[in-house]
Amino acid sequence: MNRYAELPDEELLTMLKDDDYQAFNELYTRHWSGLYNTEYKRLKDMDLSKDIVQDVFTDFWIRNKDIDIKNITAYLHTAVRFQVFKLVSRGKTAPAFFELFESITSTSLNADGRIVEKELIGLVEAWIAALP
Image (cartoon, rainbow, N blue to C red; front, side, top):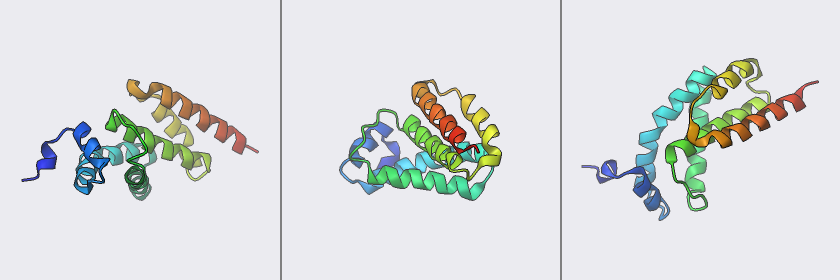
């Protein structure tokens, strides 16, 4: 039986600080599909959504000792959202910009509202800067 499956996210995060790959694997298993589904609804692109979620988890593994996370779900959703903002600001998903913007602004994740607000401001500024 997998003892990691019974542990809360907070304990897995503590174990992750000691490079416990199984703790990372359990967090990945718990959160991957929710992140993917959220991004697929926004982007309507399976491969791009998978790539974004994979990139977020790769970065999470690399930086796990440098970041202090209190709420893993909010952290991961914010990180994925930020990756989408970067894509939009680079013009790689420009045709879907308005739909994406509307989707992001209508989400009700109150715990990270200030972070979302800052990201949205950055997104709008980048989009405006890209205008001819």
